[in-house]
Image (cartoon, rainbow, N blue to C red):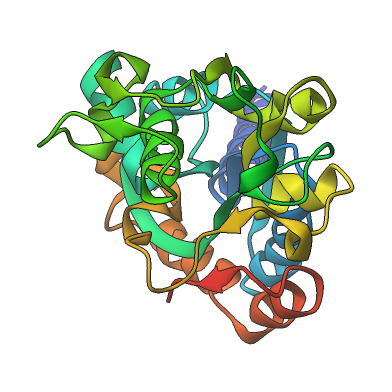
Length: 272
């Protein structure tokens, strides 16, 4: 009887130990995963693919979740449903937090994607007709960026003292050509270019849409105040000092990424 009880006790302990081992292994595997929401665009995907390989070298697994949406990624990170996101610049993130009450912070910078004014109908700004239509981003941070570019080129005048991230078409005080504005989501700008006289878009989106930055009517450069438009990886503030954050930074800020950007998107400026 004693032997039977002893065997039973040993069996129970063995089963318990095995169960704990499995639970620990599952927990360890989960701890070594990093989920990141990535903008579903060729340049972002290309960099994310490099990051997956670089993260793997550090003993972790990076799991990209690709989205075209520019609202949900911050909500997902704010709710801790994903560790990070990669789709936005600093100005957009700040404006989103202010509007939505989220607390996503920039973990580190990646690159600056210069914006430009493109057209399939005209070869210079002088050709844009009276009453012409210009496509600009719908979101406030980039809406103002487009309007400030048009003001710099003399196509319109804005109220004095307005901040770029808070500027809208309502702040236009002079519009000599009586231009019309078509406000669309960022990712739709490339698809809108056929229907307007000119469209404001980022270099990466322009290239993805079959446009050549060399043919832009006007293009931002390093002399312009484009630092607020540096693209960042966003995280929840609770993860600011985590090991995963540092692993991500090394995966996104390296010579491989620089080489890919230089070869495929020569106008893009690395931001580290």
